Image (tube, rainbow, N blue to C red; front, side, top):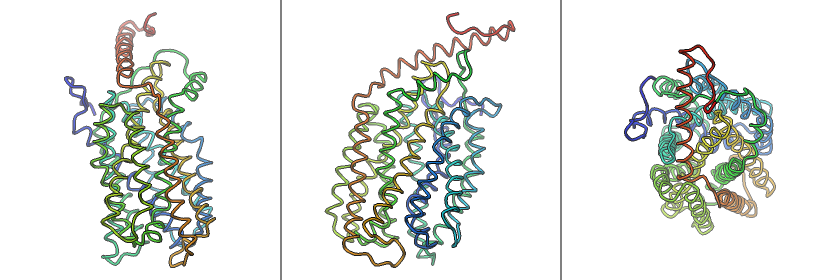
Length: 472
C-alpha cells in the first residue's frame, strides 16, 4: 500500500495497479447479472411468487433506500482512518453484501413479499457501501481526464469476465444435469467465494491517497445544497437514471422476450446475452479511445443514438435464428459498454470541480447521488416493466400458455421503453461544458492548492501552530 500507483514520468496508472483494483468489480458484476437476468424468473417460476409481488417488492425497497446513499456519501467523505477512507468502507460492506447474496440467490420455496423486501434492503445497503467505496476510490486513484476513462474501461472489461462466468453457468448447467434453480444456487456460491478474495486483494495491494481539505467549517449545509442543485450534477443524475433504466428495463424482461417472442430456450438466450456482454471487451476500450479524441459527452451522444437504432432492428429479427440475432446483440453490447464508464468518469471530473469550488472532498457524496439515480431507475425498471407485462395479460410462470396478444404486448414493451430512455440519457449531455481543456485547468488549480496545503501542514507541524489556508 506504500508504493506509488503512477509512474511520475507519465502520470498514468501502472497496469498492475489497474488490474488489481479492477478485481473489486468481479463480485458485484456477477451478482448484478444474476439478479437482473435470472432472479425474477427464479422467484416467479421456481418459488412461485407473482410478478406483481416481485415488482412491488423492488419498488418498495428502492423507496425505503432513497436516503441511504447520500447519508453514506457524507459519512464516507468525512472518514479518515489509518486504513484509509474507501478501503475501510469496502471491508465494512463485504459481509453485508455476502449475507444478502446468500439469502436471495439461495432462497428456498415459501418466501413472500416481506422476505424479499428485507433481503433486497440488505442487498441494497451492502451494494451501496461497496459501490460508493469503489467509485470514489477509482476517482481519486486516476486523476487525469483521459486516464479516468482508461481506468473505468478496464473496470468494465474485468466486470465482463464475471458476467461471462455467470452466463457460462446458465449455458452449461443443463449439460451437467442442473436445473435453472440449481444454476442460480451455483451463481450464489460463486459470488460468495469471490467477495473475500477480491475485496481482500484490493484492500491489501491498492494505494489510497486522501487529499487535504481547505481549513474551514466542518459540516456546511449550504455547500451540500449548492452541490445538489449544481447543473452538471443534475445532468449526470438524470442521464444515469435514463441509461440505467433503458438497458435495465430489457434485462428485467430478457428471458421472457427471448423465450416467447424470439423462440430461444434459456440456454441459447444466455449464450446470446453472452455475446452482448462480451462485446464490451472491445466496446469499452474503443469508447475510451474515442472519448479521448471527441470528448466524453460527444461520445455518449453518439453511442446512445447508435444503440437505439440497433434496438429498432429487433422488430425485424426472424424467430429462432441465432446467427441473425447474434450480430445485433454484439452491436447493442458494444454501444452500451460505454454508458457506465463515461458517466462514471464524468462524475469524477465534476467531483474535482466541486472540490476546487468548496475546498472539501465530496466525491463519495457525488457518487452517492449518481447511485441514487441507479436505484430509482432499478426500482422503476422492475415496477414499470413487470406491471405493464401483467397489464397486457402475460403469465410468467413456468409452462404457462400466453395468448398472441400478450406476446405482442411483451415485444412492444421490451423494445420501445428502452429506446425512449436511452435517447433521453444521451440528450442530457447536449451543451456539456466540462471537457478535457476545462478539466485540465481544474486539476492544475487543485495541484497548486494541494501543494500549498501540504507545505502549510509541514510548517504547522514544525512550529506547532495551526495551518493557515492558502493566501492567508
